[in-house]
Length: 258
Image (cartoon, rainbow, N blue to C red):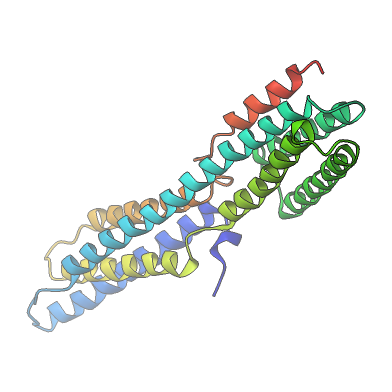
C-alpha cells in the first residue's frame, strides 16, 4: 500500500477532494440516467454511509489525538530528564562536570534544531546518530566518575538519571513513529467517496440540480480528514507539539555557571 506520509498534506487534500467530487459526479450521472428511464427514486444508502463516515471520523480523530498527546508528554518527560541530569552533573568533579554540561547543551540544541524547522529524513537520521554519540560520551564520563567514586552520591544519582534520559529518547522516537495506520486514512476517503456517490445519485432525480451543496460537503469532509492527518503529523502541518519544555531546559542549561 502507498505510504501516505510520503506526500504533503496539500497534495493529499487535492487528490482526496478530487476523488470525492469525481465519485459524486458519477453518482449524479447514474441517478440522472435512471430518472430519465422512468425509474423510481428508492431510498439510498446516503444516510447510513454518512453515519458510518461520522463514526469513522470520530474514531480516527481520537486515535490521532491520543498520539498527539503522547508526543507532547514525551517532550515534557525528556526535557525533565535532561534537566535533572544537568542538575546532578553539577555535583560531579572536574573536568567531568564542565564536559557533561557542554554535551547536554549540545544535546538539547540538536532537539530544538530538528523540531523548530522543517528537516529532511537525512537530517533527522543525522540528528539521532549525533544524539546517540553524545549519549555514549556521557556514559563514558559516568563510567569514569564511578571508577573513581562508586558511592550513590553523586555518581550513582547521575548514572540513574542519565539512564532515564537515554530511555526518554527511545520513548519519544517511538511516539513520533506511532501514527494512524494508512489503511484507516484510505478507508476514510473511500467511505467519503461512496457517501458522495450516493448523495450525487439522490440529486440525479431532482429536476434542477445544484452542485454546490454536494461539492461543499465533499470539500468539508476532505478538510476534516486532512485535519486528522495534521494532528497526526506535528512536524508537517499547522498543528505543532509545543517545544516550550525543551526551550526552558535549554535556558536553564545556559544559565548554569558551573
